[in-house]
Length: 395
Image (cartoon, rainbow, N blue to C red):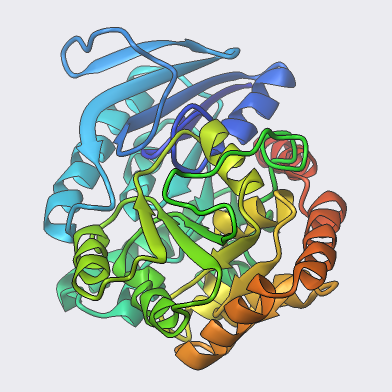
């Protein structure tokens, strides 16, 4: 089939952001489908294209599929007032592409939710991929104007009712899709890239890390939803413990976190910029603990599917999380790590101290984490299910 894959934040593994869409597109192309990816310029992404933009776009072949990249910058460091115009500009450009060419099927991968607009404009059936449930999560976080939430609500209802199928990244999202009127729902979670992360990767450590220090790594967005102030609070309690926290990424809270580290003299915390996935995999291999944190928002329990958890498990690191639901179940399986209550700084500090000073426990939990990734979260298997779902939607 000829497929249009709409994902504004698309990236290959050469970028520093999530690569689920790259894995799925590559699997579709390997099945013989002709795939066009439409994307924007997401901060940290690498689309595989390097030529000049002409009239605000560039395109080319990347590993067997076509990429059309629009010159529309967007990133987590921007506030909603800056991102919303970028979302709408991408929707308009992608709608033009969807109408200009004939496709057999369109896949709209959200977020942002506005990616549904070009799918609705296309002359083809579409599949809606729900990566994050909007407006449920923005409403839970607060700070979003009510008229905007109302518009999101209507668009989400329309997307689920009109889609030939919905692909949800968690059971909680699948339940939302069904409640919004989706006829067919597939739950295909984030998976682990077992080739990119794992014990076969050459390790490295940052210069700031002492040879005696255990490294706990958090790699991902540094935003309000991630609740990383709690990590700094915990490290303030862990002065003198041979432990260093690595915060790798960017986002709206990056400057705030850097200021706190400097003002409070948190010499056991190192802030690193985002880096290409392959280099990040080496840093995971050189670390001993994987950290996953979210703000204390109850809706996060079953309505999120963080890919950073999959990176931690694939790398064979014990997982420390403060998120209930899916994240806690991943930690408790084996066990592969330690789940602590949301917002409990003393429990978080205790878990980190315990693992930092217990090499045997770290090793057994890390082995369980890698085993869990191999048995349950292999992204290649998920890609097969994904291709099956799209082919069934077209049929």
